Image 1 (spheres, helix red, strand yellow):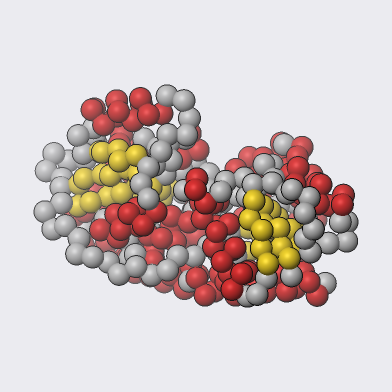
Image 2 (spheres, rainbow, N blue to C red):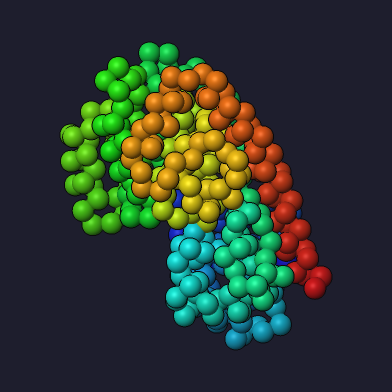
Length: 317
């Protein structure tokens, strides 16, 4: 089958959507399909289209539907789709109506769709290969943040939390992510000067970022909205517990009973959670155990099987 795979964020962007598109491209190619990965549809023939992002990929979806009304359209929803755009944006709403199948990346995503569309919706968790954990530091408790600097990520919450830690804390926080909004780089430099425990590393290659996660004792995910953060998969695959904002996208990845949540935007609560993870071995082992229980959901073989099955189901429909 010839598949057009559309993503507004190419793999070079080093964000979750780009990584998702590249994984799916590999899965489908290995299954024998011809797959064209592009930022927009160029009108070339295709038997099926898979598009990430309801709003940004709407033009490609609409052109394909008009040219090939009988050919399947699969829409993969991102965090800004689920928790912002499909509520108010006309293009995003139109993309939902055009799609024959809709994919969400975590369990709670289904609940954001109108009831009349839910029979089209399936859940495919993102994945990451297992990474053997190297020896972690013993003289410090290392925490990492992996998120580009933009408002949706609440990128400086961990820096603010670091100022609330006890004076004898051994916590060091390293933040990986490039500035995607005006003024964010300058703000990061200000925060680094004001928060000695927090260091901004900028954008790093994916492999280096994964190794940093594996060397860290914990990862902080402070996002205001998430469709299904791939960084959670990568941290779990490295055996690194996650401290996450309690938003639906994170709960859909880690489970309702996960012990590592903090209230959205609450630097004081995050500081308390980091401190507890540092000083309470039983609590830390509980977090690690709960993450390990979720690990099978994020297995690459599982994601590959579900992606290939989805395409086959569309072909046979």
